[in-house]
Amino acid sequence: MMKTDVAVIGGGPAGLAAALKAAEKADVMLLERGEELGGILPQCIHDGFGNFIFKKMLTGPEYAQHYIDKIKKSNIKVKTKTTVLKIDTDKNIIATNSIDGIMKIQAESIILAMGCREKTRSQILVPGTRPAGIYTAGTAQRLINIEGVMPGEKIVILGSGDVGLIMARRFTLEGAKVEGVYEIMPRPGGLTRNVVQCLDDYDIPLHLSTTVTNIKGKKRVEGVTVAKVDKSMEPVKETETFIPCDCLILAVGLIPENELSKQINIIIDEQTKGAIVNERMETSVPGIFACGNVVHVHDLVDDVTITAEIAGKNAAQHVKEKSEIAEKIQVIAGNNVRYVVPQIINNRYLDSITLYLRVRREQKDAFIVVSDKKKQIFENKERIVKPPEMIKITLSKKELTFITKNELRIDVRCRK
Image (cartoon, rainbow, N blue to C red; front, side, top):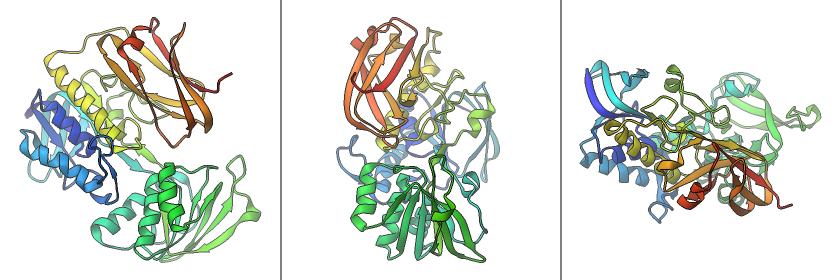
């Protein structure tokens, strides 16, 4: 039996930041199943990280190393190559590694920071044979940037998520030919800046409302069939085209890694596929917190770090002073809002709060409106809002005092 004040599960950017913040006030143990800390960041050798926190553009490894160096100087107990098998509502953790074997860890607080995983071919039901040469975008990224292996020379990318867009550029820089990026939706799935910097700047074609309908190949991918889709997302047979290639990259979405959360019946948001949290980043199970991409998939690692520090601070505080039962204010996703995080707040303890939301559809000259059941308390205009791009709004202490009901509603709408 091992004991700790705070146990952090996951050593990616969220876990690192949460552990460091919690360690300011409590004893912390950090559990990471990989061989090294940093999560996905060591394979993200492009820049674009840390612009808000550090006011400069860092690569993924640089961003991760900043926190890893701090971890090494701290009193945080780090266990890598350690897989967490089970947790319970009493904050008992069953984990295993090759040195300690099966171990039981008793914590006062747990922070879930397991990140997210990529959707695979089986989850999007692409028909065809099962040859070599089909990879998720993250796997291809690791092969090239960490292992030094080129997965193919003629590439088709299905899905226009950010990692897929970045890999289109990466393949091109390594001398491969990217035949095209095919996206089933009528709009790109990644940030506008990545569409411009990764596709437009390299003359890589982006085909919207188009998907892969078949994969051909025996031992190795020989090509894929693509087709336009109609408004019901059904392929239009007469638009089918065969694209010769030796590698198919899947960039078709990310899912929060919540198997451990589901073990103990933490309430999951149907939209985000992550845990429902309050302003403290506390889940529906008292003393168990969640942060980063395990809650919802973020655009920027800076925002992952910010939410992780909130979780770390409050997890440590929970060890000293158990959370009080207080009246909850439900945050409702209203008109043209797909989801809002956090989903629950208690403004008695807040000086301000930042809400993260995504819209359902693109809208120009949009007004972000926050109201309770009786009155509007906040409004902000955006020139344009898009589903792939996160919106952040911060409510001040004064604005929070205007809330008189137990419901806060976020709407995105045009001025009447």
